[in-house]
Length: 118
Image 1 (tube, rainbow, N blue to C red):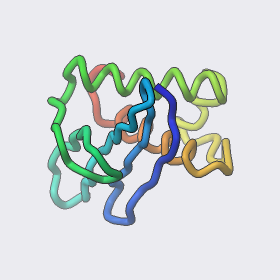
Image 2 (cartoon, rainbow, N blue to C red):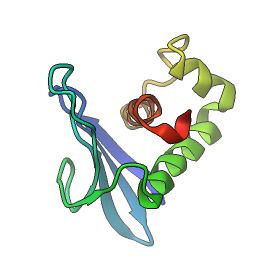
Image 3 (spheres, rainbow, N blue to C red):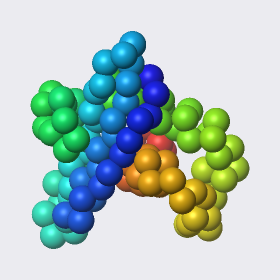
Image 4 (cartoon, one colour):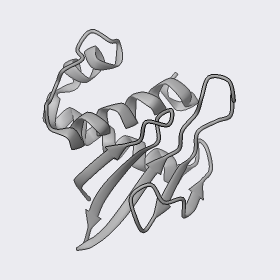
C-alpha cells in the first residue's frame, strides 16, 4: 500500500487516508469523537474520503493491520524516535506535507484509544 492523500474534518477528528494497493484506491477513515459523547471511534473502509463503508471491529486483526502499516510508514519517514516524540507531544512539526500530518494524527488518535498500544 502507498499513502496518496489524507484529510481531516473539523468535527472532532474524523480523519481519512487514501491509499493505493495494486492500483486500486482505498479509503480508511477513523470517525470523530467528542469529549461529551464518550463513544469509541471506529475505523471504516470505504470508496471515497470520509465514507463509512465496512466498519472494522475495535482491536480486530484488520484494524491492527492498518494501524501498524501506518506506524511502519511513519517510522520509515520520520524514524522511531521522532514518532515517539510526536506521540509524547514533544515534536509537533515533523512535516509540512499535509498527508503525513494527517497520518500522524490518525496514528496518534489510535495510540491513545486502543488497548494494543498498552
